[in-house]
Amino acid sequence: MESERGKSFVMSQLIQVRRKAQVTLPQSVRRALNIEEGDLLDIRVKDGEIVLRVKKLVDKEQAWFWTRRWQEGERKAEEDIRSGHIHSFDRAKEATAFLHKRAKKGSGATNEA
Image 1 (cartoon, rainbow, N blue to C red):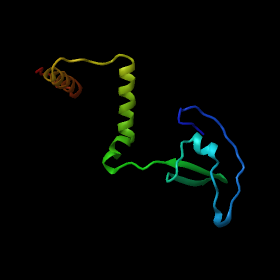
Image 2 (image 1 turned 90 degrees about the horizontal axis):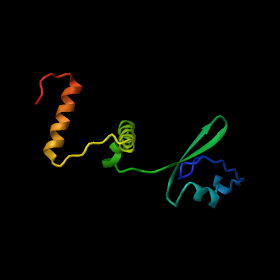
Image 3 (image 1 turned 120 degrees about the vertical axis):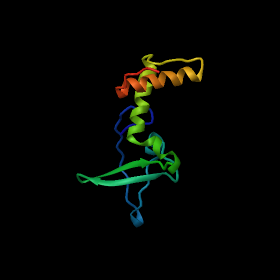
Image 4 (image 1 turned 120 degrees about the horizontal axis):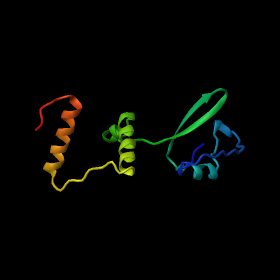
């Protein structure tokens, strides 16, 4: 189990199945995982165990941001920023020229702008 802060920990509690097969998640579990009323949980049976995962819905217009490819790019950008691999420009034209030059280098084009 991983908390909101990203630290791994193990929590074990005994709960009882009630009428209509209902269970109540203990407050300590809800707090540790920031589970609120109305949240969705994915339930799976894996190797004889029940596994619950908290799921959050994302608006369709924002789904692109959460794709694997985009998130990999976000992580790379964060790494670049932390390690100082950034460029600053006084004008948008300078930034555009820089990007065009890099694009030509990456595509193998030989004539410079």
